[in-house]
Amino acid sequence: MLTPLDIHNKEFKKGFRGYNEEEVDEFLDKIIKDYEKLYRDNIELKETIERISSKLEHYQHMEETLHSTLVIAQETAEEVKLNAKKEMELMTKEAEIRAEKMVDNALTRVRKLTSEYEELQRQHQVFRARFRTMLQAQLEMLGKTEEEAM
Image (cartoon, rainbow, N blue to C red; front, side, top):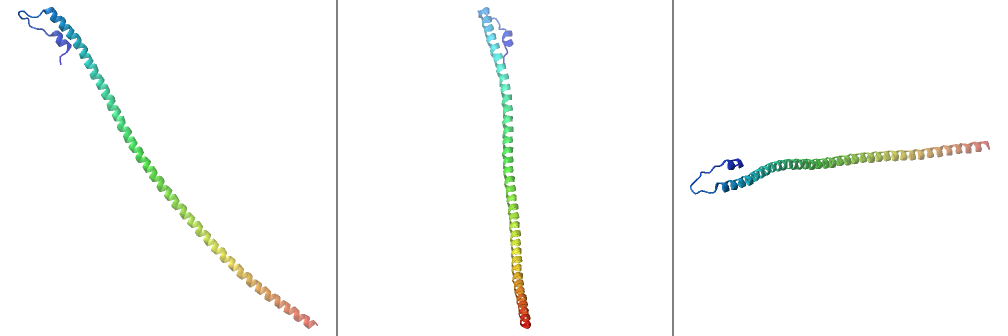
């Protein structure tokens, strides 16, 4: 690519009945001035493109990082939900087992108490029967003693 300095240092050969040297120099000075401005603008635009490209790379990297973080967060959330579900199922199972044990213990106690109650009723009936028999025997003895005393 030509630089403004290349244009400025360019020399043309002089020929017979050539162009007016002053006009050519003035025109070349205008071209140099415009070309210098375009050349500087081009350099600035390239630098701007580099800065923007660098920022774009940075943002793309941030996007990738955010995407990775989001994926990890989603996986972690799924894992937490799965663990919570497993823990809930385990706690429910443990509660069911404890409830079954409590029911079994209660039923065993009810059976024991029922058995004890039935045994006490039987003993009560035996006691009553014995007591009645003893009272009757005593009454009979009292009755015989009164008969003998008469």
